Amino acid sequence: MAQPSKPRHLPLAFYRNPDPVAAARSLLGKRLVAQAPDGTRTAGIIVETEAYGGAEDKACHGFAHRRTARTEPLFAPGGIAYVYLCYGLHSMLNVVTGPADSPMATLLRGLRITEGKETVARRRPGIPEARWADGPGKIATALALTRADNRLPLTGPRAQRLSIEETGLRPRHIVAGPRIGIDYAGPEWAGKPWRFLWKPEDDGVILEA
Image (cartoon, rainbow, N blue to C red; front, side):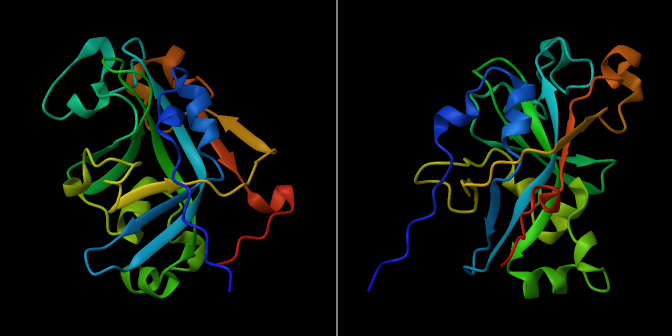
């Protein structure tokens, strides 16, 4: 009997991409996986991302090389999670990319849940499946992510709690638009088309658990 293949974590080289926009686009179609301490696994295909890139990006928490206890994970070499609280309420999961000391990350904005649907339904009671994880705060709720997951490695043998896997999906019809909620960064940066949305059905892809 054939043995099931091991999950293919994205290699470390994937996260060291010095182009934050390319990294954000490349995460579309990958599978985000969260495993609870009791072994419960929930996962979903990444369908919406936002790029935040470099010390010159006025919308980035690391703008002007601003290093604080909160932003320090952004300055690590790519391949870890950056989880912060928005308005003190919602955990937001970011994937740190790029080389060390260059604050780059991709905010995960949308997932299509494909694994652990019963678990996610309990975490998102009364919410239609299509809305379980269609926003960054909703992703955290659906996958039970908190600030305790900040700085976790996303690849290698230590990526037990949180990881991103290859799926073989290659999104083609990607819609780019301005990032959301960053008017404070001014029109030049707020208007950059660095948010990416992929609807699998536009490529004839049917996602199944």
